[in-house]
Each structure stands twice: as structure tokens, then as C-alpha cells.
Amino acid sequence: MTTSDVDDGSQIEPLLDQIARPLASFTGDGAYDRDGVSNTIAKRHPDADVIVTPRSTAVPSEMAESTPTRRDRHLQSIAAHGRMGWQTRSGDARRALVETAVSRFKRVMGDGLRSQADHRRRTEGAIAVHVLNRMLELGHPKSVRVA
Image 1 (cartoon, rainbow, N blue to C red):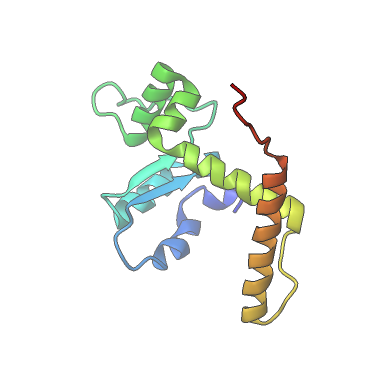
Image 2: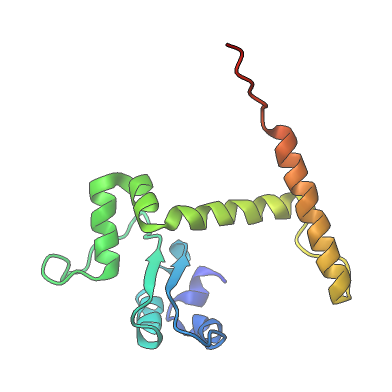
């Protein structure tokens, strides 16, 4: 989805429709830093923890001092602990790791699978993951304590 796709939150409704049980958390990058997205999630899953990376130009709401929103609390945490500290505290670091892994997979293996049949696609995916893991393993140094 592009930034314009998530402006009003209507584009995430089909994704939320696929979830049968209560949503525990929603994690997204800066493209999801929109009031419409937060409001849509809050309406459907009021107890869900929304972890969306605030944009670098984000400013707190007018009610941040008296009744801060989740986003305001995220911005306050960034101000207090820095963006990296906020990522660790909020769980956003996990999203960043997943995005990095998917990006690495796509750069090495390509954007899509070539097989048409489901069982072949599963096999192709498993092979691709094995190849990528092997490449990463070869890149890690082997440390041995000498003394």
C-alpha cells in the first residue's frame, strides 16, 4: 500500500475483515501514521495495541498534555528516549527486523515465486529460505576462544 492508500483508513478495512478473533496489536511503518488508520482500528479492535512509527515531522495533538492519545505517548517516548529507544520499548524494532528480512529475501530470490501449483510453491519457498539462511550463515564469522 502507498501512503495515499492509507490516508483515511478505508484501505485497511479489508485486511481487518480477514481477522476473526480480537486483534492484539497492529504494527505498521510511517505510511500508517494517520488518524483514519488509528480510528478504524480503534473502532473494530479497541483493545489492540497500535504501534505505528510516527513520521519524523510528527507533532503531538493539542490534547497531548491533558489526555494524550497512543500516538502522543509514542511521541513523548521518542522525545524522552530517542527513536531507537522508542523502537525497543514499543516493539517496533521487531517490525523493522521483519521488513529487513523480507527485503533481503526479495533482493536475493526475486519478487515472486515461479511455480503455479501450491505444493510446488511451498517447496520453492522452502528452498529459497534454506538458500538465504545458508548465505547468511556463510557470512557470519566463526569465533573460537583461544585462551
